Amino acid sequence: MASKIENYVPKIPAEHWDAIGGFVRSAITDIEPVSPKMAKKALGAVTAFVHWAWLLGYELDRKVVFDRFAIEEFIAVGYPPNWSNGTRRNMRTQLFSVSQVLLGAEARIPRLNPLPGESPSKPYSKDEIIALRSWAKGQATLTRRRDAIVLLALGAGAGLKVEDFFPLRRRDIVEIGGAVVVNVGGKRPRQVPVLAEWECELREAISTMSPDVYVFSQGRTGRNKNTVTNFVDRTSGVFKPHTFRLRVTWLVHHLTVGTPVKPFLAAAGVYSSDMLTRYLQFVPDVEANEARRLLRGQ
Image (tube, one colour):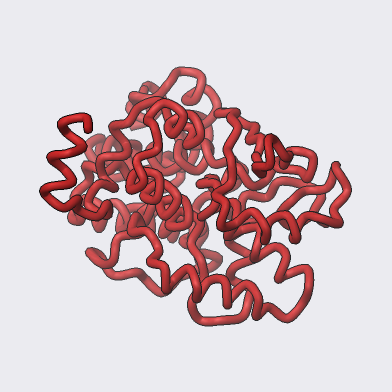
């Protein structure tokens, strides 16, 4: 059994496995799988989950990574698009079992989201965006209102991923030709113009910030990857934003208006248009005559 765990090599980049392999192998060893088959199955599930968490910047600490809310987020938005709902259910059950063994009484038990249910990949409607703006403006303090607006403007207005928020400082948001542009760093550096409808709110939110402070949660001293989730959890209101749905709203907007593919992919921080196909279901149909006109190149 020990050799099965020690010699496991997943289909991820070797340098990624070098970073997370010891953490994964230690976890699998400690759950004590009863057979080589169970060890292989657990290795596959835990590796996929830990790899996702590590790419997002989660600290390789069992209490952080195997927190059940992190598992729920992985099942909701981190799973490959070709996974069936049955696979997602099985994966969640298996990861929860691992969490229970590793954390014991410290394992938090969230209210489970139904599977299948409303896709976390569904963009927000116009009415929902209005409701989220109201959520932001309704926070009790100026600091929370500012962070809420920044979250919405950079998510729905610039399509930022949750990991893009943490290193972003005031100096990284600039004006170019009258447009508000976000200089995103990290693993996929890029420039992202903010949608015009969010420019004024973002300008106002960051207007008094000094260049070196973090744009989101400016008083923090580090890059805790749970910062956004913890902030949203602490806010008042019933209808609260999900960062991935904010990004999807931005993606679907550009698919709908026909933004040229090359600059769109560059701004989105993706290398292939393949990942966008899952969102085509949310793009409105074009009337037949208009479709013919466009396809003729008129």
